[in-house]
Length: 324
Ligand SMILES: Cc1ncc(COP(=O)(O)O)c(C=O)c1O
Image (cartoon, rainbow, N blue to C red; front, side, top):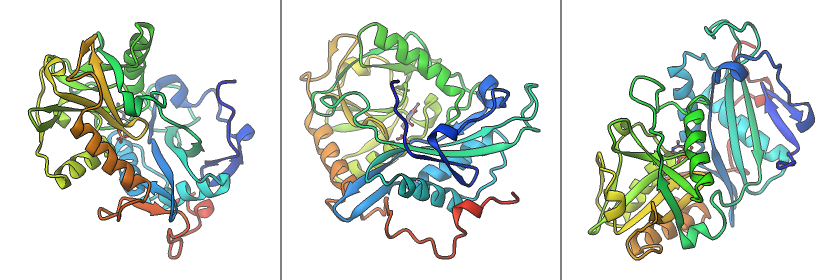
């Protein structure tokens, strides 16, 4: 099996054993992709394990649910507590975190409104998403023949399970053609994002990234990178970017929870800049790494330490379900 599993999975307020964490085949989510989810990471720092941007991830989960008219059974603090409890239960120092809110089992018409909204949190150990050398050496990517979703079709601001049908097409095509990842354009032909990461362009000392209107997921790493770049004195502009900027950039890099900051060294076999990690990418990557590993003061308050997270005033997650 490619994925050995972990100890416990949080399901609707109870910690279930991995082997028992099952849902019914008639669950709405299986047939119609009616779920929203998150991907976050917990890092092992000298001051203890800490979840990066826990609040922002749970806020985006609830925002995604809102778009799909899912009434979350749990509040944001309850979801945050659920994540922390799941990591503690599995005794990981560092891990990837996957909260999932989905339409469960009731009926199988397309209209999901009568189906229950269920929540699960999984955690597992997951290293560098595009391979261990990628962070230093960079990756070779292509422009996908698949576009990101057109506006007013699948909302890109929601991190919805169904959106990842599109992401899978992009990723499979890239892999099968020998690339590490694909970059999708939006339906107007402007640069959007990778199958699971946002993108930044460096040209003549300035930094650019596509805006929300280019069918991107509003990435939390993207948000951090914009702050870090500004802290380091760079100007970052959110701008619609033509495809050819990918070939003319001095530096390009992906950002995301899974890939962290990963340099791109070629696009469609055209070398980006000097064909290796550029100096601005490296400076941002270094600061990002120092922050997530707790090596510099957490001035933006991005880390939630596991052993210091307040449970006081919060209901224990296991009994925290609103109205359950
Ligand atoms: C399509 C897509 N874009 C961008 C990102 C990066 O978002 P974040 O930095 O919040 O992980 C992700 C990862 O979740 C993604 O799946």
